Amino acid sequence: MNNRMEVVLALVIVGATLAFGGVQVITYSLMEVVLFALALTLLWKQAQRGEIRLALPVWPILFVLLVVLQVVPLPTALAGRLSPGRLEDFKLAGATPSWTTLSVYPHATLVTLMRLLAYLCAFVLAASAFDFRKRRSTLLRVLILLGCFEAAYGIVQYVTGWQKIFTYTKKFDLEEATGTFINRNHFAGFLELVLPFVLAYAFYHFQAWSLRRYSGESGRSSGRGGPAQVLFFAFLTVFLVVAVIFSRSRMGILVTAFALMAVALLAQLRVGGRVWVLGILLFIGCVVGYGLWIGLGPVLARFELVGEPGYLRIEGRLSIWADVLRLIRQSPPLGFGLGTFEVVYRGYQTATVNFSVEHAHNDYLEFVSDTGIVGAVLLFLPIFYLLARMVISFLDDPRTYRRAVTLGCIGSTLAILLHSVTDFNLQIPANALVFAVVLGIGYKVACLDRHVDSDAGQEPIGR
Image 1: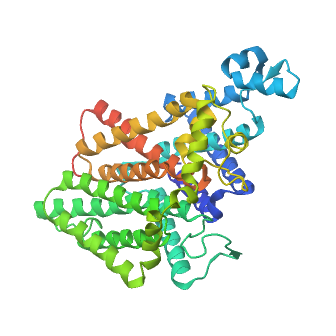
Image 2: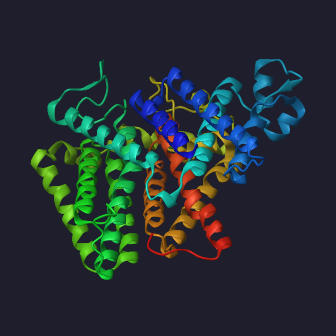
Image 3: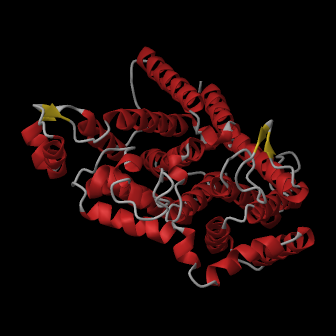
């Protein structure tokens, strides 16, 4: 059952990613249907066994309840107390209904709530299906293969100038690698989620190789832990990093570099010695050398633009953020409604007034606008707490495979949280889905599995 769940969940990720990141209605609707059906199947199987145990913490339930409250009709007087701006809207319209919702656009909130519930299902399914004792994961393997495909597709786009996504001719980012994504930043965001797991697998095989060397075992029959496997995953890491570079996403490049450095330093704390450090230096040299060979001029030009007078104002993000901060200062404690940013922002927009701004280019600001300070705290504070738990678990975990998976979850989570400062990867269904799966696996290995080990009272080391 667990293996089948992993396969179906992996196929959903593949489908959403290849279909322009899952941004079309038909794509994310199918994604929701499959994930809901898979979650119901899990519940049914557990009910047949006589126990229902979902790997679901309390904090996402509280966030979902807040969003549900935004779309439940409330007496207008009560809604006015929770969101004074709603009464002002009715006064301007000249009519005050008896009942209203906290969300200014309930339909958009309901649509986004369905996606949120689908991500929550993915979190539960990943936490339920992942089993570190097998020392292999279909889900992670498919994710790495998909990342390699996206990287190869993007490099071909950049090197050859063939700017198509299958049969669709791109209209934007015509000089950058975007893979099957419309936007280069979301392409880079997807690779940021995958890259730490590739480096983590190199770390896993390096650990196994080192253990065998010290114990004097040949390990040929185990099929793991040899220089060939370490070099293979190191090469894949270089390959994916080059693809991120050719996306010309400045934040993507910086975040990737920071996340991989964090992963490498954490790994160094566990393995010690000079071999791992030399390997990281060699890795950096390969990335720079390969990039120079193909051509880094256009990439460096993107960074040089930042130094030009007035560029930050023209680029638009700072102006949008200034407008959003004004919006937030007037927003109710529970926000204007999940998924309503585009509608609400129009009343505060002073930048790029000839265009409709769909997102704040900052996931944190957008969630504060949509769900208020209360919602943003309920959503992000537990994620940062889980990240801290994963770091602690990695540092004291004696199991090599689980330790490596935890390391990948740390790097992936850190990368997307940093990139969310300047972009909206969490609003892209494919990237949000992968992030939910990563959090589910991280919750399983850092919280649930550790409780099981504590209850058992023992942990075999080096497995």
